[in-house]
Amino acid sequence: AGETEAGEPRVALALVEAAGQDARDRFLVEANRWIENWDSLSVPGLLEVVAVDPLAATYVGKCKAQATLATHILKHWPEAKRVTIFRSVAKTMAALHEKGVVHGSLRPENVLINAAGEPVIANARLYDLSTACRTDATAARLHQPFTAPEVRHGTNANAESDVYSLGRLLQFVLTGEPPDDKDERLPRVDALRKADPALMRIVRKCVSMERDLRYPHAQ
Image (cartoon, rainbow, N blue to C red; front, side):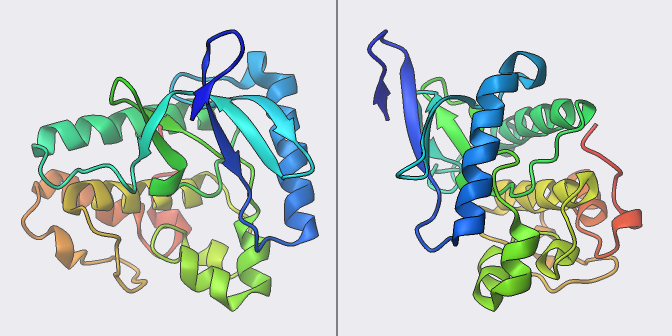
């Protein structure tokens, strides 16, 4: 994190080093596309891409990030505060879905926390997880906690797979632990047995193994 010459806060994000050339090419194309189409595709709570370095496969976003949701201390916060953070994420995802944009790789590492303690979603549409998981068993295992089962098996991400990721993200926000549940048609989500029953029902519907049992989009 740092500042631009104009004094604007910024954060640099890079493609994982293990990614192949196709993944790097997609990353750079989509990052540049965000710059070109920001005025028409931007929504509140989404990281603005302001520059791309093709040699390093890195982009710079406008955000004074303090942490990510993966590193932020949530366990000791009141549940109401944690749910408020999740609602902000869900609201941004709903706005993206309204514009026809699928994030494709929503997980705690892709949710930045800014200086005001607000979530900012990064890396929207930059990764093709379906291809990565189809060609690399390690990638499928690595992304399992927050990635829909059909995407891990090589099906392209869509709004319903984003909904799955949102459900697992809500589970993470409520428990402070990465989900480790098995894929089930109607998941029990035992880790949430002490949570608000209404929130547990939302998570269960979001993370159903079958797409048509989930909410159709984040709205």
